[in-house]
Amino acid sequence: MTNPNKVTLKEKIGYGLGDAASSMFWKLFGMYLMIFYTDVFGIPAAVVGTMFLVTRIWDSIIDPLVGVAADRTRTRWGRFRPYILFLAVPFGIIGVLTFTTPDLGMTGKIIYAYATYSLMMMFYSMINVPYASLLGVMTDQTNTRTELSSYRMIFAFAGSILVLVLVDPLVRFFGRTGGETAGWHYASMVFAAIAIVFFLCTFFWTRERVKPIREEKNSFGEDIGDLFRNRPWWILFVAGVGALVFNSIRDGAAAYYFKYYVEYSGGEINIFKTSMSLTTIYLVLGQAANILGIIIAVPVSRRIGKKLTFFGAMSLSALLSVLFYFIGKGDILTMMSMQILISMCAGAIFPLLWSMYADTADWSELTTGRRATGLIFSSSSMSQKLGWTLGGALTGWLLGFYGFKANVAQGESALHGIRMMLSLLPAAGAALGAVFISMYPLSENKLHEIRDKLKAMRHEQL
Image 1 (tube, rainbow, N blue to C red):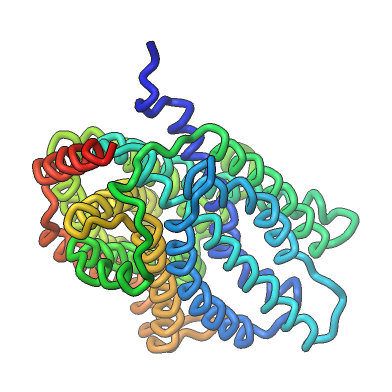
Image 2 (cartoon, one colour; image 1 turned 180 degrees about the horizontal axis):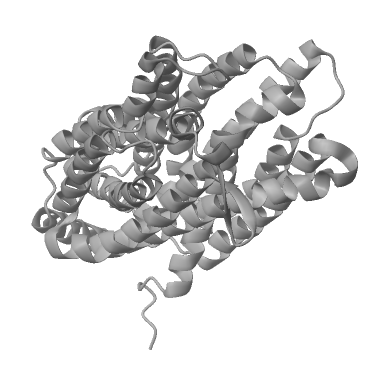
């Protein structure tokens, strides 16, 4: 007889597909939206930079509001799954509109870009925050949460690889008759259609099982107060920011590193009769290695615990990043090998991070008597975006500080700075994560104790 409380393989895959959907557009935004706005739509780079700052601040405000709303949602499908069902199609439509280029004057283009990108970020929060929160109510088993989180991260990086591999061929294919603007428009339609299907699979293949110990409606102020007093959550918040700064600086500086420091045969090599840039190879290898790290994280964390696994991965990431500084500009094989090792360590972090956020929701419910899964995950999502925003801003600020000038031979200071941005500077972010996670108080034994107490309290409510 099937156990209705057991999370099935189909359900794990369904949950993972949701982040594959989100990550496709996240990767499009992170890697291609800037150059799309400047080189395809024709908006000045400075205007785009300001727009990114303004919209990301707005997006950060939206996240906790969505989380609080989701916590108060009551439907026959649960609290979080309805958002995935009803927002999947609008998410895809806004995604296509973001990569659409209407024939407008400069002012009209800027207004259109602000409107579509702001809407896209808003819809991203409205579907992604409930999706992330779903992890906390699919099961109360801490090891199963780590498995679900690992499926999520594997599918997320798989979605990113899908974009990295397909976006250029799709843009070229669809742009043969209508030019680059048509290429981006129709390529985004392909990714939007895939994302919608993936989100619907998440809705239909998952279940919400964990119920709060009581259903009373507490105020927004009480929820915020509970969050501020949640010490384990604060520790994860800072550790997560450090991990995202680590990743975003390395990713943001990669193209500069290979274009201006390595300068390897025009920056391209042939693989399987296809010309690929070193930057693309480096990034794709990193995404693939992230997946390996996620796979390894599950058995390792079961053996030594989430906290120690997280600490070890962050510490090793910092050490390897320091060693990356000493790689010679012609030693491509060593660069790619180190990228694989560093990315495996970095990949192991993220399934642990989201699983541990779910654990902090349990800790908060036990200590306060109120469950605010949506608020905790939305605020945690905000920390991820904060790390991403800080990393992106630091990339630009550091390039300026070291005297970088576009499309010219770089001086020694700029080259030194670019090398630092692939090594010592992200190592500092990883070290920050390691220091804070060493203070995390929820051991595996403590988590089992929390789960048993919550089960007993829920039983008393029946």
